[in-house]
Length: 225
Image 1: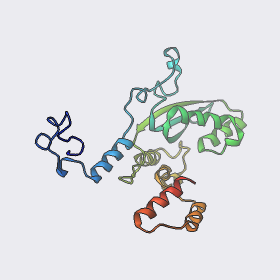
Image 2 (image 1 turned 180 degrees about the horizontal axis):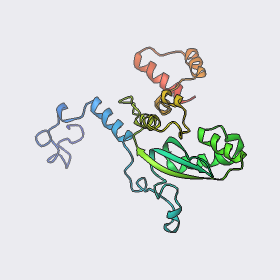
Image 3 (image 1 turned 120 degrees about the horizontal axis):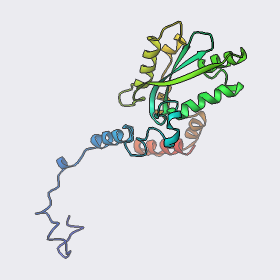
Image 4 (image 1 turned 45 degrees about the vertical axis):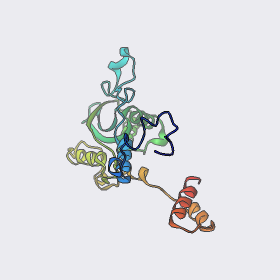
């Protein structure tokens, strides 16, 4: 206060030791700052652009496969496949990206033979194509859930998908029961992976004394690989 607003300053009458009260208890500690930063990063984006549910023109919104909700993220979806003269089948999946992007990947796997084994759904679709059987697909959203949270170490998105697979009738579902014990695929996105090249670089780099210097040097090597 004395340094930035000395007696010769024009603002000294406003900012001085008698008018400004500052103490440690009035400021956020390091834990509060980190928690606030994590909550701001991990919470869903509430901007107007992110709350749009469909980017189709009004004239073609009726043709949206998800009834005008193709831009929603973090959902559990269901596909009902109805072949001609056969029992309908259903497939349950999840996506942390927009549902439009996920359905686009599905449609690509239906057209490219090299992607035929990508999912159980694509395997079934190519089986119908090889049999020259006509079919129709109806998409729907079952649930919206939050993805993996590194603070709670819980992924409600994967857990919700497993729940819906578990309660699905066995005679019509295309999902395998082995999917119930699969690991969370979103957890790896929150990890700081260090490759063997990084380890070799770290071992070949002389370390500066001091724990803080070592941590800074490690982060520099990892981020520059």
